[in-house]
Length: 219
Image (tube, rainbow, N blue to C red):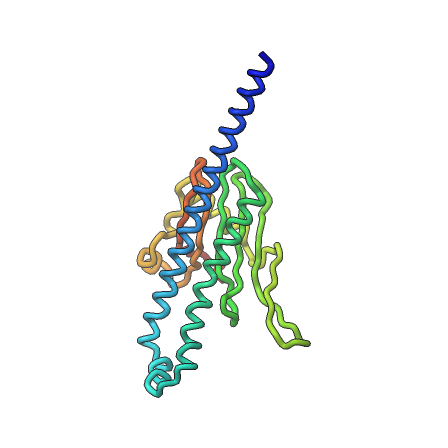
């Protein structure tokens, strides 16, 4: 009898483990697809815009392939932000695994560097604490080279206020006059807005969205 109970427990535990594993990998795949799609779209848009760039047209006309490649490398650097978003979103979700609903935001910080420094912040529903990964650059005066800094500092103001608005939008379906899911709608009402890349678990379901966040405290 005891042996049978142990077998039942083993098979139940194994089934539960497989189910959780499959659920995690399905979520991971969804997040990967979202950021890979945004990366490819951004790179193609950047390359296409070179056709309307006077500086690029000039170096192209004189056959300066080195400078032409620099322009294209910049497009690749801009697109690399999405690899950082993907990596940091998955890292925060894995490090803080829970069945609770959450919101993860990814946003670019202004900088002269490419790819730009990025900020990824995670907050669970009804929680007071935040988990963050901030990617930026430092400069080594000895080697005269820039280097990547990774820490857990929230490097922007008003993060609490921003999350209040985001939570109202995702959990309560409010703030639709401040948060938009397409560029044209945002442009109708606001001149300045931030672009956020969201990974969230709402009512147990993973969602991924690109949103345009119009507020009084943009970067």
